[in-house]
Structure formats: structure tokens, C-alpha cells
Amino acid sequence: MSLILSMLLMITLPGCGPKVVETDPTATSVDPKVSFSSGVTALQATPPDYTKGLAYFEQATTTDASLVKAWYNAAFCAQRLGDNAKAEQYYRKALELDPNMTGAIFNLGEVLKSSGKAADAVTLYQAYVTAHPDDIKALNNYSDVLTAAKQYDAAITQTHDVLAIDPKNVGAYRNMARAYLEQGNYQMSLLAGEKARSLSDTDPGIYNNMGLTYLAMKNEGAAIEQFKTAIKLDPSNMEANLNLGYIALNSGHYSLAQACFEPLAKEYPGNVQVQMGLAISMRGAQDYEGAEKIYVALLKQDPLNRNLVFNAATLQEKYVFNFKKALDILTDYQKAAAGTLSPTDELYARLERVKASEEEKKKADAAAAAEAERILEIKKHNEELLKAMDGQIKALEADIAKLQGQPCATPDVLDMASMVIEQAKPVIAENDASSAGDIKTFLDDAIAQVATLKEACAGAAPAPAPAPEGGMTPPPPPAPAPAPEGGMTPPPPPPQ
Image 1 (cartoon, helix red, strand yellow):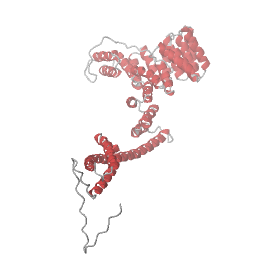
Image 2 (tube, rainbow, N blue to C red):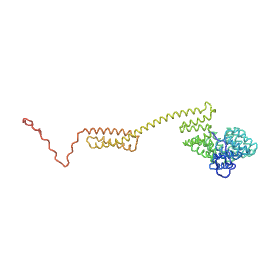
Image 3 (cartoon, helix red, strand yellow):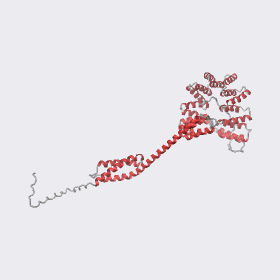
Image 4 (tube, rainbow, N blue to C red):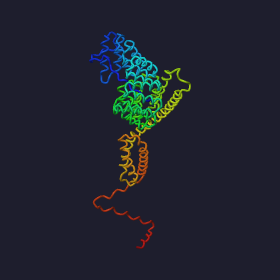
């Protein structure tokens, strides 16, 4: 996690006039003053449109390279968009035209520092403070860039020079606290921070610096309280929001992190740290699509940012499981960084791991596709069973109706068959293919038993006709057998 140790300078736009009708920033024959005014209009929008403003100011400088304010504002827009290379170029152009343009000097110093060129920023301020030894703001900025250049003793000496001019200068104590923090002298850093707070308890930068010191001392609870106080005093404070946001990310408190990063993302759309913090918090909140959009935009802006590349790849590899996209991100970085990577760079191991994961996913996807096909075939088969069962049930109902009341018909068999029919009808009506196979088994058994019963009944003697209604006399008994031939007397009847 990278912690912010400096305050961005408040930048005012020179030459900002009333809103005007915008011109086409792609046109080549527009009055440069009109282009400049259109750029100002873009910056006065809510929120400011830095991209459009940059296009207008660049157009103005293209048609009139002597417009110092156009160069300055173009640099300002580029700085806000995170394009430090272009911002540096344009601030230097402005200073070529007006070497005493204080705003360009201060902002160029900030751009150089944030671009890792703190030594160049030291040279820039050194010349300025030599010519302006009483400019306290410049002296404080000089101390700040000395700290960034790791010239801690010089930075602390510079704060003493400021305090010699203004003994109660809050900025000097704040810079002193920062220099001691970077030097690793935490107790002196806290002491300088407390002194600054005693002079001004409403300066958010003081609390931010003290929070960083507590964080370095492994006292995260105290650090969080300092950052929260800084944000309470200035809700849009970039450093405090960034620091608290990254602490929240480390602890898995994604909603707090997102609340810290979102307002900064609107104000600093080109700041990679801000945007990446927001993307990670969105990833933690499972807004993968939103996080991916941020990563795509950032990678276009800063394709060689290693931390950004690995975070973007992590989203695809471990959260979305789109290993192809992860490979594309890592491969693009490998190509862009060609010649700067050592043979043992972790990138290569990461590439191999993602490739292996992609192969495993292909196999798993193939197996899943085969299983889905198998399930689909079973479903189709069962749906065909449902259609066939409809006709079988009608035939079975007809057989049951014919067998009802016949002495040869077993009531248990008919009742069982009727129960199976009652269970099968809802399955067919709801087209429940998942239950078709089981119901078909019971239905086939019922059909077989009823068929056996039909065969048994077909071979049985017809039942005797019922007695006629009305109480008629039954027919007489059959006549006695005739006497045997020869006149023999028949045997006497048996005794009664």
C-alpha cells in the first residue's frame, strides 16, 4: 500500500471568464481566444470536464503558441487527468513564456514530485527560493520536495528557516513532522505534529500526518481516528481519504473504502491510486463489472503500472475466473515491459499459473457441457415419456372401467392402478419431466397387472344369470332317471 505524504496545491485558473458557447475542439481554424474560452467553460462545468478542457486548451496553443494561460490550463487539465508527462511539458512551456509564473512553478514541482522526479523539483524550487527568500509558501513547498527527495536533514533545516521568519507557521511544523516521519523518527514527528495542532486544530493535513505516523508505529486504531478527523474537517481531503480507504481495504471493510474513494474519483479522475482503490473496493463489494471498467481505463492510461496490471489480472483470475482476459492483461504488460524484466520475474510464474488454470477451466467447461448435454437428452426423453403416458393413462382408465364389478377382477389391483393414474396426471399436466421416469415405472407396472387381470377374466366361465325380479317360482327339479331295463326293482331310498 502506498501512502500519500503531501498535500496537493490549490490551483486557480488564470483568465477564467464568463461561460461561452463551446467550439469544436477538433477544428483547426478556430480563433485561439474562442478555444481558450471554451476550455474555461469546460472547467466551470459541474463536474469539471478536464478531457474536453484539455482538448480546447491544446487547440488554442496549436493556433497561438504564445498563449501562456492556455499552456498553463492545458497543463492543469493534464495533471488532473493523471497525465504527468503532458502536464510537465505544458507547465514548462508556460514557464518559458513567463518564468515568474508562480502557479506554474508550484504545480510543476508537484507534478515532478508525484512522477518520482523529486530531485528535479528540488532544483526547480532551489532557484525560485533563492530569488524569493521571503516567499513562505515556496519555502514550505521546497521543504516538502526535499523530503520527497529523501534529503531529510535539509528539509528539517528548511523548516527552521521558515520558522525564523514566521515562528507560528503551521505549514513549517507540518513539513517538519513529515520529514521526521520519513526519517523514521516517529517521536519527533508526533511532537512536531502536536505543535502544529496547537497552532491550528482545524488543519486536516496535520491530522493526516499524525495518522501516518501512528500507522508507521503499528497503532492502526489511533491512525484511523486521525484520518477520520482530517476527513471530518475536509470531506474531500485526498490524502486522508486515500489513507483511510486503503486501511479499510486491508481490513475488508469495502463499503467504508468505497465511501472514501468515490468522491476522490470524481474530483481526480486521472489519479491512478484513487481509481485503483475504488476498483478494489468495488471488487470487494462484488461489483466486478464496475471494477473492470475502471481497470480497462487505467491500463490505457498507464500500461506499465505493475501494481495496476497485477490487480487487474487478479480480478479476472480469482474473482471472474476469466483466465483468458487475465492472460491478455499479463501478456500485454510483458510486451510493454520487454527488456526490463529479469528471467526470474514473478510475472512469468503468474503467466504459467493462469495458463494452467485456463486449461483446467477448459476441461471443466467441456465436462460441464457434456453433463449439460446428457441432462438435456434425459429431459427430452422424459418429455417424450410424458406425451406417451397421456395415451397410456386413457387406455388404462378404460380397462379399469370394464373390469369394475367383475368377480374375476381383483379390487386391490384396480385400486393400485387408479392411484398410479391420480399421481401421474399432475406430472403430465405440469410437464414435470424430472419426475417422468419414476412415474413411468409405476405406470408400466400398473398396466402390466391390469393386463394380466384382463387375460384372467377373458378365460373365466360367465357368471350365472341373476334371478328374475318379481318373486317368480323357480323351475322344477329334473325328472328322475328311468328304471333300468329288465324290470328290476329300484333300490329303496336311503333311511331318513
